[in-house]
Length: 325
Ligand code: PHE
Image (cartoon, rainbow, N blue to C red; front, top):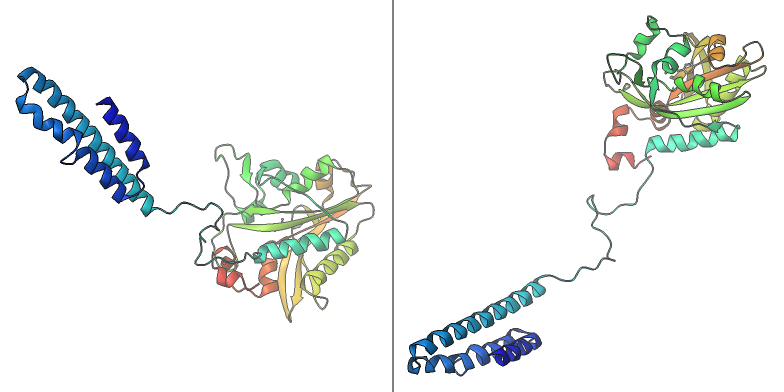
């Protein structure tokens, strides 16, 4: 029986298709097979021998059948599945595969980096989670100051109100001053967070560009000249700007900047000369140095530049729309 089993395994392993497997089946389980022939002799044997041989033959028969079934299953499986070609291009996630394109906000940012670095500004990274001191106190907004209301915000921990998702990038002003000596010219791009109701022109999170220039003899003229140059480079050489008197606790004087683009005056952001107390908070001598700061919205600039009517379109995954810019 051992030899028969060996022979069977050998032949079955060589069988490549249904036909060849069938031949093996006939040979080892058919009418003229070893098993069938021996089964026939059983009635002539003594009860004891018959029991033993019957058992052995049955178990061998089962072994053959199982092995054959398994082989048939494997062949069927192999026929069903084509082998995987890992070098084939992946399945596109979106309708058909598309070439990627820059998001309008990214386009504006990229251009912002270019025009500012051309004027010698450095681009500075900054934390999105800020402490109360840098975001408010150091900018002349103590806890009771009404200017906080305008930026009414979320806190990380309501109970001690020490950390918050920053409400503006201005928190980086004093943070940077403490670590760097003037003169310097920086922009700080980044996300800010406010407790706002969303509409076509407002969102609870948006991008800002903060600008900070500190040096000896820096004046309002420098502020105006710099912003005019930037705006012309970003919106076109015919663009004009105007300042409207405004109020920020951390600049003196303070102003809103408007840009005239395609015949319309549009509000861009806030600006002013850095308040002496803010310089002091940053460890800078206001007798020796002066500076200007400004801040505007990344999306607002994209909206102005591309004529987008609803700011919220910028966050919707409508590729057909976004791809046009
Ligand atoms: N932080 C102000 C805002 O978020 C903008 C600003 C920046 C104003 C710098 C003055 C100076 O509205």
